[in-house]
Image 1 (cartoon, rainbow, N blue to C red):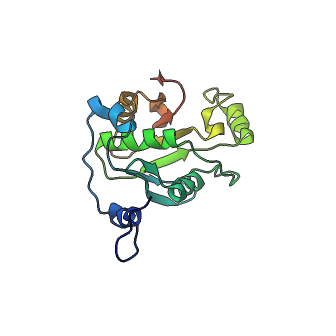
Image 2: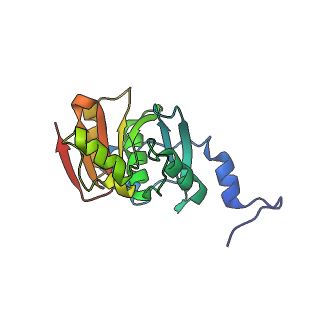
Image 3: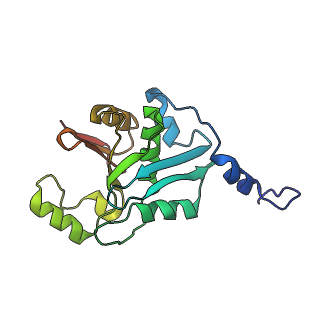
Length: 189
């Protein structure tokens, strides 16, 4: 049941309208797992794609509920830029991305290097790099490769690892961190 105000605006609609102005305290590393389990009223993602020139600053979760339209827009943003193909990005991956961003206490957008990849794109990348997994979680919309200009790869890696919510790969030579919602594991130097 949705609570409606006398003007006919739903409580959820009102929250959405004011969500962009909300200030949410960043959790510390010690309570990152609590953030992923549902602590906090609002979850937000900020990303930039140098490939497409697009930016996204999206609140996608309010008071325990995902906003379907926002998740769809994030999925479109994280599409395979080589083919234009879109798949639904796993909300667990989006949560890890958002939690890590909050832990880093920055206001800059991530630079998205790779989100969803088609199997064909993944195979093409494997031909030129031994570091691309055959069964990459990118193919299932469960991974992202990200960087932040204002934080080092080590800082991003540490924050993502502290979430204990999926795989985190450190690619210092290429200046990015891989985050996924698969098994908890880490790699990289």
